[in-house]
Image (cartoon, rainbow, N blue to C red):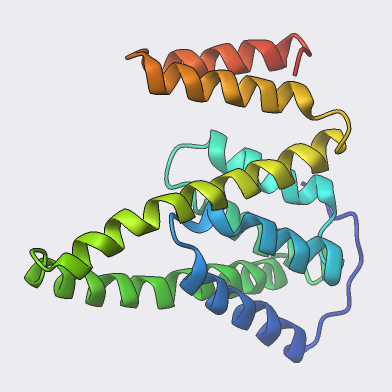
Amino acid sequence: MTPVLVLHLGWPDWLALFGHYLALSLVAVGGAITATPEMHRFLVDKNHWLTDTQFNASIAIAQAAPGPNVLFIALMGWNVGLNAGGGVWTALLGMSATMLGILLPSSIVTWLAARWGHRNRELRAVRAFKQGMSPIVVALLIATGWVLANAQHGSGRAWPLWLLTGVAALVVWRTRLHLLWLLGAGAALGAFGLV
């Protein structure tokens, strides 16, 4: 992706990027993708370090590529660095700031919590916590879908995507159809321009 913006970022900006991703790491329950609405607000709406197109392309490319889906974080940081105009070294700085920021706190907390939770898995509080987190994760994923659909299609034209999402959710809930069939159907609908 070629840079669309020309930014002048100083060390306080790079530290703010790193610090923001440190904080996001601790609230990204359900994975980094659930913090996408806040990333969009920070990178696109507030600081204008990325365009909507760069933001969505970072997610789309990382989701299509093999490997962990957290790679979209690296692409966002890479694009911020490219937009800062420093070439590969600045892009690597942006990528490092976002990836280390999102990975360090959550990895440490996860490791500590998993050890504690495994030792205390029979406690009612541990079981209640696990059950209570499910609706939060679902709500964060819905918010992510909302931001991506509205940024791509505009808020008034995203209804076919929401209809497709509802149908897919019902199919997953009520049938044993493999998810790859649903992904293929969604890809076909998108290829024909229906969604």
